[in-house]
Image (cartoon, rainbow, N blue to C red; front, side, top):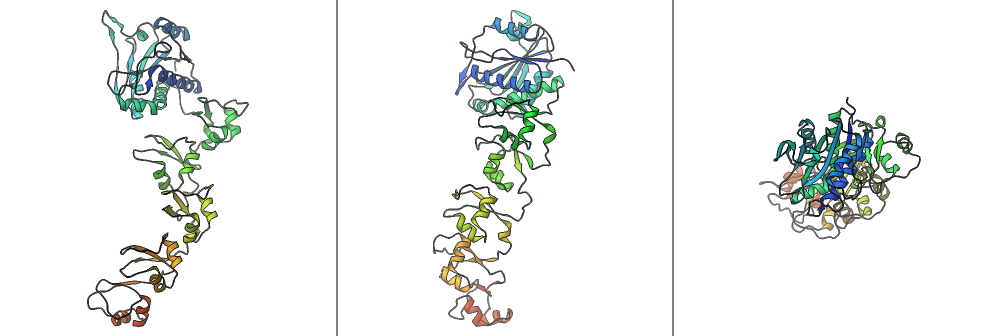
Length: 446
C-alpha cells in the first residue's frame, strides 16, 4: 500500500468560534472530534499530526502552511478538516478538492450513514472568479494534499444538534474506519478509549484479559491512565465464544428489557460494560455475560409494592442469601419493577393451583378448603392485606393433586361425587358448602 499520512484540522478556534446554536459552539466540538480522531489514528499506528490541539486562533494562511509543513506537499497525505454545519439543513456532507476523486469522500459518508446519521452529499465547489480553482481555501491552498472537509451535521437543526452531542465519537470513528479502509490498513486490532472512571482492572475485566496483558500490549510501566488515552486490547484474548455474547442495541431497547431478555441484572450489564449512564444508543454494542445463560430453570420475578427479600424468599422456598448471591445484590433494598432471578432449586418442589375468588370468599375459608394457612396463601401471592376482589386469581400452595370442576346444567353433588369416586360430604367440606344446591358455572374443588 502507499505510505499514507494523516493531517487533522480542527476548524476555527480562538477568536473565531465558528457557528453556534442549540448548546454547541463549533470550534469546541471541532476540537473534541479532532483530538479524539488523532488518538484513534495514533492508536492504530498510522502517522498522524494535528494542526491545533488547543483553543488557538489561526489565520487561513497559517492553517494551510501548517498542513503543508506536517508531511510535505504530497498526494499521499490525507487532510481531514473537521467542521459543524449551519444554515437549516440536516445531515452530514463532505467537500473534496477538484484534484481528488470522490472515492474516499463517499466512503466517509457511507460509514457515517451506518451510525444512523442522515447523509447529504460529497461535492466539489469552484471559485466563481476562476473555475479552475477550489472555492474553499482548505482545498485551494493545500497543494497536492488530498483535502477533505467533513461537516458532521447542522447545529442549528434541533435533531442534528442532539445527535451531534450524543454521537460525535461514533461519527469520528466512522471517518477513521473509512480512511483506514481506503489506505488498506487493517483495523482488526481492538482499541479502547479511556473514559472517566476507567481503570486497568475494569478494562481488563470488560475484555476478558488480565491487567498484566494490557500493560504488556501497551508498554505501560504503571497503572495510571488518562482520559482519552487509547488502549490496545490483545486480540488473541478476545473470543465471542468465551464468557459473553455481543448484542447490538435496537430501537426501543433499554437496559431493563435487555437484562430481562438475557436473564441478567441491570447492575451486571452496567458493570460488565463499564457504563456511566443507563442511556443507550441504537447500534451500540453491549457485552452480555453468559454466566447464567444455562440456568434456564431459574424463574424471573418482578418486584411489586410491599415486596421484601424475606417474603420473596419465603414464597419460593429459598433464602435471602441465595437470592442476593444469584442477583449480585449488595443491599436488601428493592425497587419497584426490579427484576430478580429466583434460584432454580427453590422451584423444584413448588406446586400450586390457580383459584378464582368468588363472592363470599375469604382467605380463611380458602385456606381451610385447601388444607393450608392464610399466611402461606399471602406469602405465595405477595399479599399485604386479607382483602380479596371477586375474580382475583390466587395461587394455592400444596395442591398439585387437586382438580377443579365447573358445574354444568343437570349436575348434582351426587353425580359429581360418583364421577370422581368421592363422596358428597367430601366435596361439601372441600368447598365449604352448607347445602347441596349448585349453580351452573360454579367451580368446585374435587
